[in-house]
Length: 198
Ligand SMILES: [Mg+2]
Image (cartoon, rainbow, N blue to C red; front, top):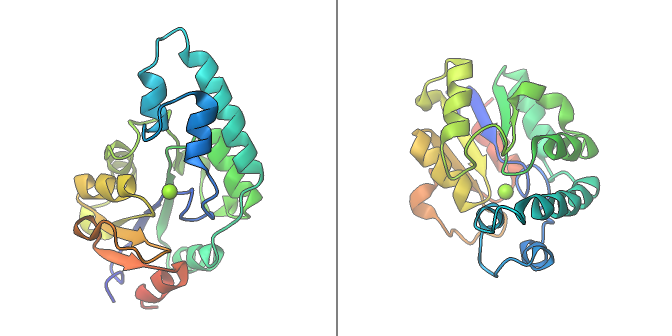
């Protein structure tokens, strides 16, 4: 059981614990950002005077997604199982912390995460930077060998690799896009629960 010895789990939120609903093309369009740009970096590249308005608009768009969020099938079961074995749980998201809290609340998953362990984009350099994971490991006094990063996107896997932890790709569509960055790949969260081995 490859995850039997793991005690510390860092989860991406959107598209991992929740069903992916963000239409990033529509968001870029609404913000007037070029296609293919990353949204946060795209805003940061605009003139400073424009950025507050773009961040406000982004917040409105994200609030709308948060209010309509739905949990990923198997998410609550996986988190309950991890809690039963006393695993530490955290969220590391490129979303905003308050919106992450709201999203988790709407999905019925808020109870699993202490407020200080929901890390949004304000607290640390966003993924793919490993900063958030490094901060959590320090907080838990955890070694990379007992820590896992779970996510559905290349930024999650890159952040996990850079932090030296085990990476789990939640690859719902089974496209295996980043095999070199993924130690374990699952198509359903329930598969991950089985890999815990208890
Ligand atoms: Mg995601």
